[in-house]
Structures are given as structure tokens and as C-alpha cells.
Amino acid sequence: MRNELYAGLRRKITAITLVVSITPLLALGATIYFQFSGMYRDKIKEQIYYRAKTQADGVDLFLKERTAILGAMADTNQFNFIVEEKNLLPIFSIVNQRAGAFVDLGVIDNAGRQSAYVGPYDLAGLNYYQQPWFGEVMTKGIYISDVYTGFRQIPHFIIAVRRQENQLGWILRATIDSDVFGAIVKAAQVGRTGDAYIINSEGIFQTRPRFEGKILERSHLDPSQFGGRTTILERMDKRGKSTLYAGSWLNNDKWLLVISQEVEEEMASFYATRSIEIAIIMAGVLAIVMVTLFTTRTTVNRLRETDGRLDELNAQLVHSDKLAALGKMAAGVAHEINNPLAVILQKTGWMEDLLEDEDLSKSNSYAELKASIAKIEEHVERARKVVHGMLGYVRKMEPRLEDVDINDTIMQTLSLLSNYARINNIEIKTDFAVDLPVIASDQSQLQQVFLNIINNAIDAIRKDGLIWVRTKRDDSWLSVNIEDTGPGIPPDKQKRVFDPFFTTKEPGKGTGLGLWISHSIIEKMGGSISFETDVGKGSTFTIRIPIVVPEKK
Ligand SMILES: Nc1ncnc2c1ncn2[C@@H]1O[C@H](COP(=O)(O)OP(=O)(O)OP(=O)(O)O)[C@@H](O)[C@H]1O
Ligand SMILES: [Mg+2]
Image (cartoon, rainbow, N blue to C red; front, side, top):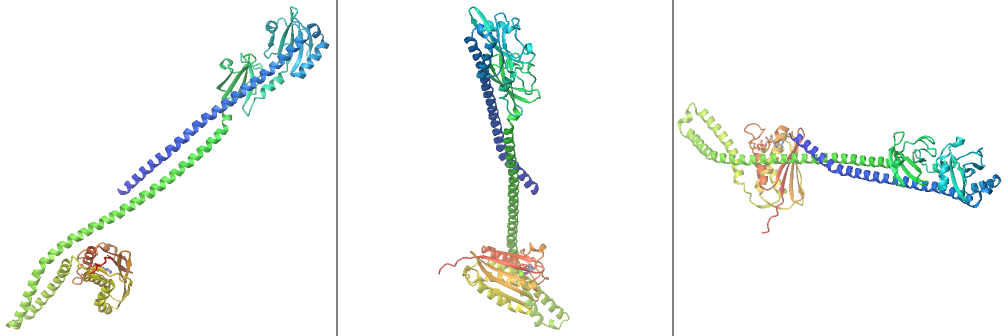
């Protein structure tokens, strides 16, 4: 029953402590995790956003520079001049020196005919009149094409500017090196999973992507989803990984520069931090669990010990009560028996006298009567001993206070017993503290106690042995120690030695009142009697008496 109760208590304390201490830790961990994860994601998005924006600006600048230099060349040279290939050649090398990435340069007249050409291809004389871009340059003045394969079957794009000269328009057109252009875009590609490319408004690749497909193929991205100038989207990429796409429009919103990055790669350092956080929290939880289990166990065990001690104390209290009640009853009985005993003794004395006086001495039954009367007297005497023991105790219940020197009192007691001890070859040794104070107590009652206990020691030893009597001061207590080399008290009897009438001595030898009376006397004085015993080795009785300082007379 009790054990279940303690186990239940232990479970409850453990559970409450664990919940109360681990919950906030986990809550804190989760909060930090989500906060941090959100912040980190925002940071990644911000980075990729700015990368897309600056890269788009860079590409735009690249296109503008080239458009501007072509425009300047067209504006400063007249058609008749530039249409001579010997004049066009130095212009081609100037624009390539100043800006670079030009593959070829051509002059196209207002009928769409390539009138002059410098470059690696054989394009002189081709007619562009049917090409859709021709009309656009003629009307708008500036044109940058999408990437296409054209007459040469190689992906490229062109920049064309128109010059209006005396009612007639003509066009200066240049091809841009797709590789140089692609390399500029690729510079924005970062990490193991990062990509950077340009698609047009239909989603066709204008530069070669790293993973998603080939130039001039259709991207799986829908450009119309990129609303503002620069937009971020999160999508599954072709490999099924969650990927961030930042798209920034350029070239008058005809092209979209896309920078993509797998979320997982970007989050790698965050995941490392997360693992550390988890490890720290796990260690914390483990520590809490261990400390909780340990403290709970210690606490409950201590409680159990205290309860056990309390039980023992309760048992002692009940026992004392029982002793007191028995004492009162015994005293009453003793008183009632005392008078009849006196009468019996008186009558037997008278009967004895009668036997001598009359002729009865000559009677046949004389010897028998005499023996019977002697037997009656012997037993009455025994009964009186018991009764006197009890009455003596009851009469003297309230101690008289006088100055008592404990060592003296013990010496007097020992002198009463020395003969008895010597006959049985028992040595009594003393070890007295010399500085014991004189106390206010009842000397004859104390003597009765010492007598009883030393007597018991002698009785226990029977023959040949040693008794040590020691006194010492112990704070506000005097303690008297009586140690014998007797047989000790067997465990089943230890609880009963203070009970009235408990004796192991032969009938007629002991009343079993000695320890009971001693116990009652000492308790009345506010002291205590206890014993330690070791079966086969001996017993030690300890009497503790409070030091009561005598009043000054
Ligand atoms: N020093 C001791 N060694 C072993 N047993 C003891 C010792 N002191 C007491 N006892 C046991 O306790 C019992 C009770 O002791 P108690 O003094 O109350 O009565 P008693 O000695 O038997 O009788 P009485 O005191 O009337 O002669 C003894 O009979 C004995 O069994
Ligand atoms: Mg005794």
C-alpha cells in the first residue's frame, strides 16, 4: 500500500517537473527555430532579388552601350561613305575596340539590301526586306532582336539603328557575339545549384541555361508570372526541388533575366545551425530528465524515511500510553491486595503461636500444619514483594527534589551490590566524568533505577564477567552507561523488556517490574532509558537525565 503511494507520488512529481521544465525549453527552441528560419529565408530572397536586379541593370547597360556606339557611328557617317567596305572596316574595328562583342557589321539600304558587310560570314547582297525586324527598325529607329538562327543557322542576335538622311533611311546593323553575351549573364550564376539566364516574353531561352534546357528552347517558367520590374517566385524546378526564381525585366521589358537557386543549398548553413540547436535542446532535455529523476527519487526516499521514523515514534508513544495505563491499574490492584495480605500474614503468625501454645504440638498433624503455615508465609512474602515494589513506585511517583551528585549516587548503589557481584566473580569497573554538575533530582528514585539495571546486568551474566559503568555530560544531559558481558536480549524480547511483569527469570526469582518502574521514574524526570544489545556479546543500557540546576538556598 505505502510503496504504491510513494511510487504514485514519485510519478506525479516527476511528470509535473518534467512538463513544467521541458515545455518552456521546447517552446523557446521552436520559437527561435521558426523566427530564425523565417529571417534566414527573407535574407536569401533579398540577396537573390538584388543579384537579379543588378545583373539586369548590367545587361541593360551592355545593350545600351552597344546601341549608343552604333547610333553614333551611323549619325557621323554618311551612307555614301559608309557603304564603301574600305570605310566600313575601320568603323567596325573602332566599335569593337570601344565596346567589343561585335561579330559583324552591315549597312542596309532602304530597300532592305545589305549594301556593305564586314564580318566572318558571306552575307553581302542578302535582302532583309521580308524580315519582320526590317520594318520595325525603319519605323522605330532602334531595334534589338531576340536570339535567332537566321541565315547562318547559328544562334545570335542583332542590334540595328536607323539613320534618316535626305528623306532616305538606311540601317547600321551589328551581330552580337552570343558567347560574350551569355558569359556576362552567366556571371550571376552562384553555387552548386544556382543558374542565371535570359528568356524572352514567350519564355524562350536567349542564353544557355545551366540545367533547365537549351538556348531557343522553351523554359518551363511562365514569364507573365513575373509582374513588377523584379519579382521573386518559389517553384519546383525540373528535379523536383523547391527553388527560388528572381526575375528582372530588361531591354524594354522584352527580356527577363532569371536567377534561380535551390532553397536547400542556400539554407545549408541554417540547417547546420538547426542541428546544433536541436543537439543543445536534446542535451538540455536529457539533463532535466536525469536531474528530475534523481531529485524526485531522493525526495521521495527522504519522505519515506521520515514517515518510517514517525511511525516508530508513534508506536513508542502508544507503548508509553499502554505502560502508563497498566501502571495505574497495577497500582490499584496492589493497593487492594496489600490489606488482605497483611491480614493473612497476621493470622498465620497467630496460627503459629497457637500451634506452640496448645497441645497441638503433640498432634499427628503438627509437622504438616507447621510446614503448610511456612509455605503460606513464604508465598505471602513473595506477593508482598510484588505489591511493595509497585506501591513503592506509586507512592514515590512525584519526585522529591534534592541536590544529587550522580557519581556519588552510583557509588552508593555499587556498594550495595559489591558482595553479590563478587560471589559470582563479576568485576564492576567505573569510568566517571569528573566535571559533572550537581543536579536537582530524587536520589532514592535514581538509586532504585541504577540498582535495578546493574542488578539485571549481574543476573544476565550469572557468573564470570565484567560490567562497565560510565558517566558523562552530553550538552544539557547527564548520561549513564551500563555495559555488561551477558548474553544480550534476543530480538523477539527486545520490545517487551519494559513491559510490567515481563521477565525471563524463573518463577519466584523476578517480578518483571524492575525495568518498567525504572522507565516510569526516568520518564517522569524528563529523561530516557534505551539499550543496545548484541546477542552473545552483551547489552548496554543508557540512562539520560536532564541537567536541572538546583535553586540557590
Ligand atoms: N542486561 C540485561 N541482559 C539481558 N537481559 C536483560 C537485561 N536486563 C533486562 N533483561 C531482560 O529483561 C527482563 C525484564 O527485566 P526487569 O528488570 O523488568 O525484570 P526482572 O529483572 O526479570 O525482574 P526483577 O527486576 O523484578 O528482578 C529480564 O527478565 C531479562 O530477560
Ligand atoms: Mg530486574
